[in-house]
Image (tube, rainbow, N blue to C red; front, side, top):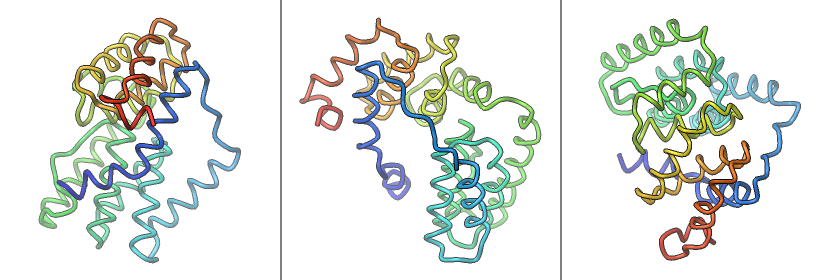
Length: 220
């Protein structure tokens, strides 16, 4: 469990600070570069390759950050990787992309259990691949509706969309972040609220940036 928490903490504080500061000014984040598709193809190739496990693990992590639904099959395949760290990275990436979780420990469970988990992921993807990622994440967020863990993944993924139908969900997420003192959830909620220019949220964003005692990571 501690290893998973450390893995999830990579680059998070910097991302949190950027998201809160951008949202407080109601600034839309810059778009991805034109080479995004090529980069995704490279990462999928790296993940499926026979190179160092560290490279495969990083590829899975990056794919999770990029959040493209069509990379799910490549990540499911990586759940069978011989390296536990790669399997863990692929599992976390899948959860980030989909807001969904299979109740299997792909890092430490038996091979039999992991194979059942892989089959479950394949079944889930076959049932959901015709849906948009936004619809998948919104359903996941509304199903869990709590700060940790799948709610956070779903809100993080949804924060990159501009659909105003998501506004009540993100206002709830911001309230949950404030009550739970959850900086990662606050960053995701702030990113969306900034993108849709929800000026009613500015006072709450000011609280996040101004309360250095409660939110030192966000105010630095």
